[in-house]
Length: 204
Length: 109
Image (cartoon, rainbow over all chains, first blue to last red; front, side):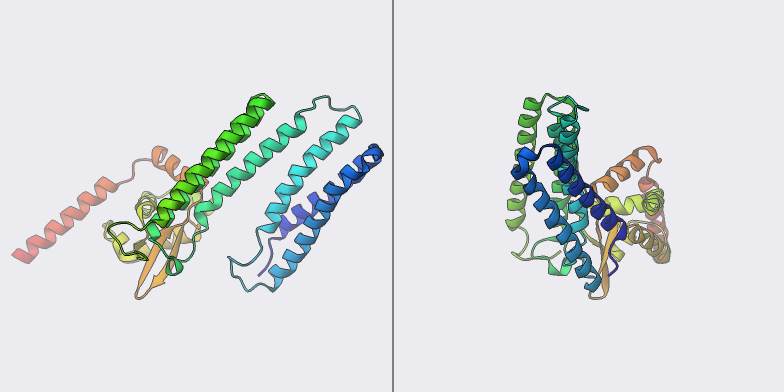
């Protein structure tokens, strides 16, 4: 299987930028050396995960469920989530940016965007009909509902981080995520319960 | 994305997607809803499959189609249905009724 090289390149570049940002921050504030080792270690782990997934994808036979082609996308988001606050911290230490909350805000927006992106692809990741242990129609309905729930939750959360004050955005995001989780769990439990008019493991 | 817009531009294909929203259906079941030939329907299914909006799985001698649309694609479908002209579901059902009526009349004669 040929790996998605554009995504791999983006993930590698962002990881490299992240490492440079950590080192520059370390140089700007050497007294907080311990604080910089954690993000440096995380970027190193991301880089290793990328290398391993690239090797695994080249050897993969095309089994979409087992191939780790989601790893570069996850690394891109993780690198952005860590890289933006690092860049803002660096900008603040050099007096370029005054806003203390900008880092938290941007991370919140990115997390919201990530949730929306995860929700967007949720209805697409259906298992084969022959391997389903419940009604295909119900599984499809569940994944569509879950997808819409997480997309709306992610978008609302991102808008909340942009428009509300930090305290209100934190509360609003928590309420949104807990509600989305509750909706998903309730629907999942309903999916597990067999319908009265069908056999326990009935395929349609 | 271009293939998605192409797939959503046709009212018959939009109607197929609407039907698949309810549950996975076989090619025959889907074709019964439209007054067009089976090869034409197969061409529509191929376009939808190429765009990654539906998924086909062989089950015995039938092919079962199901929806694999992302949330964004579903929102685009809703947008296309609202602004892309009315799906000719009423017209197709009327044509279907007329064809069935003709067939029945010939059989009785």
